[in-house]
Length: 257
Image (cartoon, rainbow, N blue to C red; front, side, top):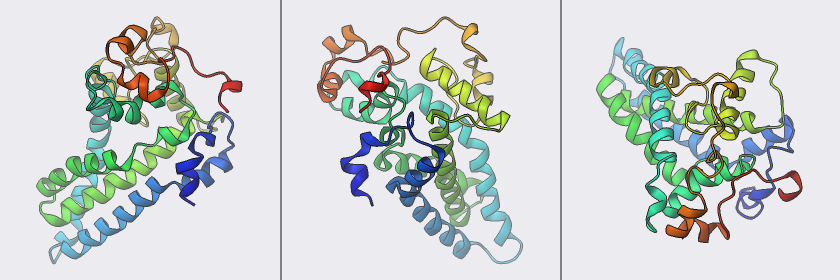
């Protein structure tokens, strides 16, 4: 089941898939299985480590609530200041990391295999955010484990919503349609804004929200994130790994084969 993600990942084209195909592919993705398995383990630790009495409920619950509330802010900060950073491609030590965690996704927004973050980077990030938060808010082991379990489950939700936003599909829900419009503007109009996935409240707070393409001029770097031909000649490592220069437009349907 996992072999096809290693050998045929490029064939998972959200621009051509149906919702049923997306659900099937999502359910088979190894990262989803890792997140769910981790959430189960963390949930068991939270339940086992909870103190006796009323605190048995409130301690892990505080970890859950804190994680749900902090996640939009954490995602915003990571997305804006790390994934869209201009420093990771400048070193051969971090070029491959930046290429994998976000550059490839902007170069081809329909590729499902690069839409998902690599668990080797996402899971440590989730734990670094949630464990201290849950430990302090819980407090203790039960709160930390509950926060970690929540972080892993919320990541599953984020990833599925993210897939829908790139799927050739129009959601019936007005909320989902609006989320999709805002996220696609980030990919196809101006990358310096609308960093949220399921919530754009933090974008509003930090002044990076824009409601339509008419609100801004189109960015020349929306597909290459600023890593243009000039930058690729100066810092060639991402271009070498990509097998060619960065693109300033999305692939045409005939090219996505």
